Amino acid sequence: MKRKIFITLLAGCMCLLCACSSPAEESSAGGHTEPSIFEDSDGNIVYNYNFDEDGVPPADKGELKKRATEEPAFAVAKNGISREEAEKILDESSSYRMYLPGKTADFKKFYNQTLKYEEKDYYSFSFYAEKNSVRMFVGTDVLVACDGSEVLRLDAANSYQQVEMNSAQDDKDAKQMYPDAKISAQDALFSLLDKDAEKLGLTENINDYTFEADDELVAKKSVNCYQFIPKLRYESSVQLGSAIYVASDDSGRIFALDNEKHEYDIVS
Image 1 (cartoon, rainbow, N blue to C red):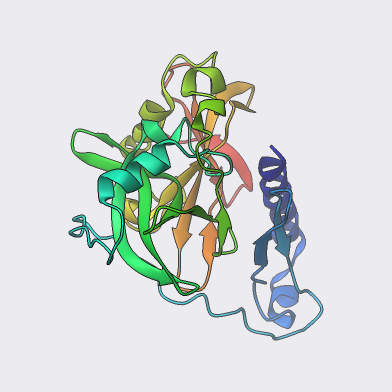
Image 2: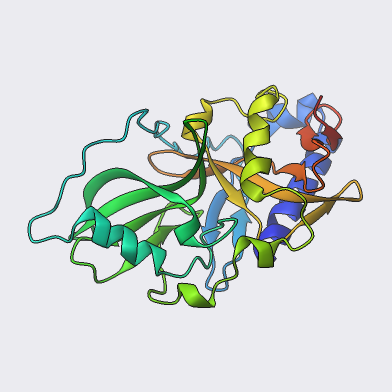
């Protein structure tokens, strides 16, 4: 919940800044200011803007990390656990701060690669839902130690944090998270495919986005909605887009940020 509030406040502040700044002011400030983003110990996403240094270019976020269309062949590390064992560990791990609309076991796992992180070998996975052979990626990327000793999740600062293992039984399932919803979170997510991506604020291939879900319904225009935040991963940063809201009442209404009006409207 704290995370949702911080993001909402950021969107509001940015709208005010955009509305109040004249072209001359933007020019003198060197254009748009890129924030540095990090997650504090309480799970708050903190945006730090440097408004004091004129003309300082934004940090290079690197190339967009595009997700493979076809899943790579699983590369078992030397003396490492199998894929089945790694997925079992994930299914039994807490979904806390993974931003999934349900438990870890409710989602399929897409193997990305076997990599080395801080001198230790890990299997990298992404969570996804699938419908009619189409994948939609959700939550956040995770690493499972090849020796089975730990699980790490990717945070908004593009670094990894510890995940509590063997505690999935303490997580809420989707029905507990969204008791008043008439449609499932997964159906709500797939409804985005029926809309113009540009109107949703999506500029890259849908396969490259990971959608973070809030753990409860959020009121938008007095309508209870699922909140999805589209996320892109770059070589040196994670970029969060404006939240997209899908009505949970099966009305088909979707609300997205209109950058010209600086407010949320129904996407036609």
